[in-house]
Length: 67
Image (cartoon, rainbow, N blue to C red):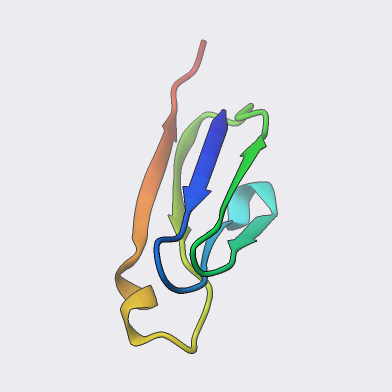
């Protein structure tokens, strides 16, 4: 999986516990990273920063199907 995390104006992060990943992008910056999604299931991802109230709404799921 290749992900580009882009922050327009404030720091943000991408955390996915199942893969032990936490990446951060500073305000106005972006980062690109890759990882192998090798576990079947549905996994939550979220912003783990606490300074910004809007961060708690930044979440979603990654679904990896069996091959």
